[in-house]
Image 1 (cartoon, rainbow, N blue to C red):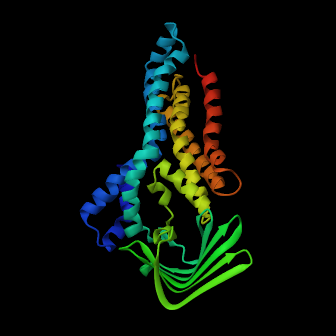
Image 2: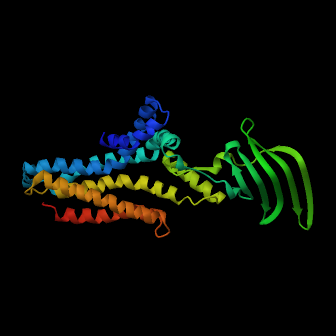
Length: 337
């Protein structure tokens, strides 16, 4: 609720400026905003919950009583680990399959009314591979009527150019799903032999292995995809050689790394809060929030490096978990047993 109030205060001006209905704001945006913000904050929620609960046990000398009865410290950890693994599994399923579905509606709302700059169009000097042996070049793409100016299609066999198609204009027909070429030329190569067909002022309908949507990009596009869709998209983009899909790899690895954060922070929270100290719950919560803030800070730095060429996406995303795993092990060995 705090996150919703803060977000609403930031966007209320946009809501008033645009013609948006109350139902769109509530059901299209905020109903889908809640799963997204929960997916980001679940590890921090887990840390605070563990510290709050365990600090109360320690304050009432329950931890000391359990240890004095002969139960080992590691046995006390078992229900914590079971609960954290359960929450981690829920977050993993949510991150990879459920939250992206709700994000699609949230992101569509944002791209339409809030952040219109998220929409980018590949409109000048575009090179794209549409098949293993076919490559296209578009000098200019006009989105409003799905028209391409100065279009070229090159076909290769065994590394040799065998067909070259050039059209002055290419327009997409939404009803038929075909492209209409105008003022086109076709050159065919067979060894040293060459044939040429030039049609000036004529039109030809043809099927091509791409659509106008492939020339439109959103900066938050990866948020709207499930993990299998991201992997398929990365493979498709690598084959076409059109963009660097590194940010999609970063998003994919983040979804898999966040659930493990819950388990790590659970161990840290229990190790900190199980010791009975002067200051009790307040001190433990302060330490927990400090550790949570440090984790977020390190995550931001490592994600920045993951987007650059400094680190691979896998290493950049997992660095915070690696660091805090070491912290968790140290705190666990130093915990009061």
